[in-house]
Amino acid sequence: VIIELKSPNDQIFKTNKKINNNDGKSTEYQLSPQISRAIPQILHYKSILESKFVVDDDLQRIGIKPGKVNKCIILIGQRKDDPVWEEHFRNLRTSFSNILEIWTYSDLINKLETTIINLEDNL
Image: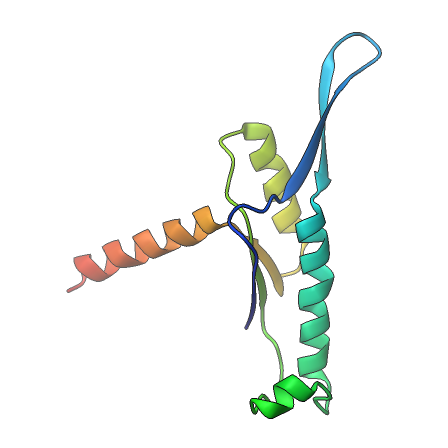
């Protein structure tokens, strides 16, 4: 598993509010520069690790050998209390294969809290 850590303050989406032709407002959602960089970055790491020969000097120096990468996780930003944001985020997550996952720090905190509750209940 490869985990790419980005800042909890980074955005997943860049939003632009615009006035449309009938004087209404619309919000455009675009991938933020941070997530746009993180996706190809983690996939590049995956390709390096899955190559037959690790050619990266840093990986060789610390003794990481080539092998299968089962999952890539990008940990970035925080969830927004906004149903439109949630829908876009859900669509983004489900559009990737099961190899690439995007988690927010909010997701991580929820997973940890659930794990702690399960551990306490089973002690």
